[in-house]
Length: 311
Ligand SMILES: NC(=O)c1ccc[n+]([C@@H]2O[C@H](COP(=O)([O-])OP(=O)(O)OC[C@H]3O[C@@H](n4cnc5c(N)ncnc54)[C@H](OP(=O)(O)O)[C@@H]3O)[C@@H](O)[C@H]2O)c1
Image (tube, rainbow, N blue to C red; front, top):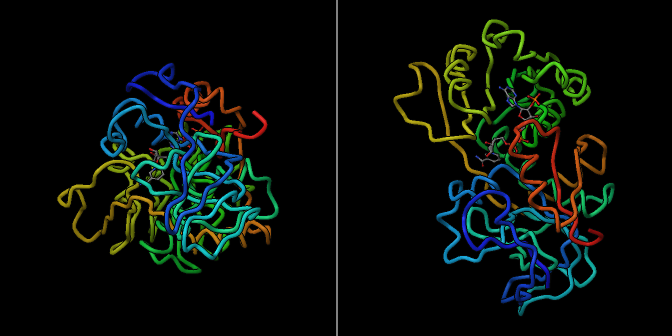
């Protein structure tokens, strides 16, 4: 099969489109013909030797953790899926999943039927960011109707799902974005959008129950004062030292985990029109380097995806 592999860590040029062995499904696994493989910041961080590079083992390695495609073969003992099923997954994260390829093997427990309302290329851009938002909002923070959530980087991959999911839940959503993304984030369901280039968000956001922080650093430091006493910040980017959490506030670091049943719920929300995945650009699999360059600029609206079927 064709795949995008790295033989060394480095700049986008290390992404090499080449022949690689087609994987075979073992017990409890399924072989997919990949249609779409999403691109996320962890992909280029890992390509550079950071991110989850420590998990890759010996190079060469195929990057990519989220994907959608069609089931083409079933491993021994697996009965939940049959050839021809349209499925999507966040696979094995943070261990290697090898999604940037024409074929990939995925543990069946991590798979769900893909949303019917979107094509399988775009469905490949949903699992990692949508599961991150779901787990941060509902597993970690237990967000309920009537609460207030501050979503940073609301126009990005995680943020655009977090805004829509929090609004669907009935929460009041305050969001940060640049001026050019204000209308986009309002249309996702945010009640208030703060243009971070014009207004320090901590002068506007008050008595927040939950902060979803996919930025970290100085943005995280300034976020604590927006929380009500007892409020919770979910840290998605960077470690969170216990002594960095101010007295009377709570902070939890969360790494997304594969979860097939949660993807089934997300597919229903997409098919019912409650959640609309936004894909800024589709790149052919041959142009993974260009996709990484765009992601690295840090201003993607929604997601980027690699087309492994038509590209
Ligand atoms: N812990 C986990 O499991 C986990 C999972 C997924 C992602 N992450 C991490 O979370 C971060 C975000 O991921 P992502 O996929 O959402 O990234 P992304 O799609 O690349 O985020 C891009 C967005 O960030 C916004 N942005 C940039 N600077 C901002 C600022 N100062 N204030 C507000 N918005 C700003 C941009 O909006 P404008 O163009 O309007 O500036 C853009 O829409 C990454 O570091 C990623 O590695 C962690």
